[in-house]
Amino acid sequence: MTLMSSEGVSEVLEEFVPLATRGKHISNRSFQSGCGVGFLTEYENVSIMRSSYECDRSRPDRDVSTSIIFKRDICPNINAPWHVEPTHPALFPPDPHAPLVAR
Image (cartoon, rainbow, N blue to C red; front, top):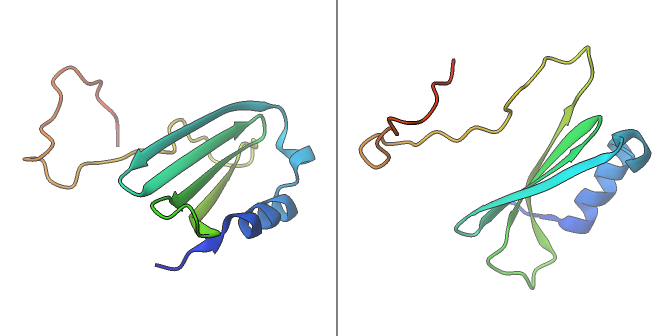
């Protein structure tokens, strides 16, 4: 797995999506699975998802991937861009009370 410097990723983000164009900051969310951590930052005009490897916090290179989702009329409307599916139904039986999701 190739890791990137968090500082370097922040610099590239600022070049591609300058803070001034992101719009009003809406929220920060995060989730963790083992050593992998995902950070979702919502802005008025864009959402930024950064994934990092956090088991060795002394390393400067921890970023695994970054995604930018623009919220413009010309872009497809994505109501729920982040969706995790279990890989084996026997390990994750369906919740009978969960809402149905159209695919």
